[in-house]
Image (tube, one colour):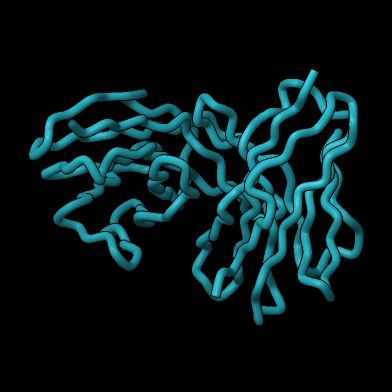
Length: 115
Length: 115
């Protein structure tokens, strides 16, 4: 079974609109962390945001926020006021405490921002 | 966050040859990781490289094919040996930083094409 599921292979969004990228995860470990990375066409992986399983509040970093719904095992990324430069591949990832510091990545969602 | 560089940034190699990819970090780090990203795919962890010990390889990756060196806390190399077209991928190194979630920061990647 997949540990990280991103159900949207591609999305098209109008500039300045908010975007929600879906991510669900599967773990039985009570201690885990969730990450989102952005990969532009240049290929570099850019860390965006982190959410810990014990964090009470949703993580926020500038225009990025993570909608963490623990009971649903959901960790959606919300990008407010999208910009053309947000066009990229976005990966959800998870680290489980028992997996020796390894991070598992989802298959990604390609986001296209339309002018 | 740490600044990570990789050399070469891209290369085109012939089947049967080997290529060594270098990863340099501007600060001392304990954990370094090597990933492969095949075209249109997500990231797959090849191995974890700790200074002073042998790399730990993930299932499906072997030392003979992907030998790794980690001579000090700021440098590592990954060699792709006896290459075939299936090895055409982006190879990324990453380092773990002791932030909130021990997030990983990535180098710019090496785009390898095997003909």
